[in-house]
Image: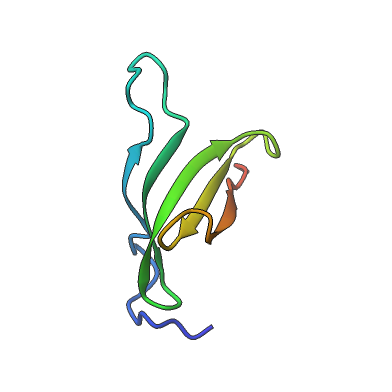
Length: 85
């Protein structure tokens, strides 16, 4: 992969401006957030929905759905938490 962004990857902000989708009930913790994700490969920012799932992994997985325009046209990635040694 030849990254379009030549800045060092270490310390780069990939996820930003995330806010809870349904923050009407303060007693209930949010389960989904919306914000933006940065793609270093092409140097573009995309809209993104994020949620946490423990169904496939007890340590937890971050489910990220990046899209342009509407969420129907997008791609979902699972970021798995690394277990502690």
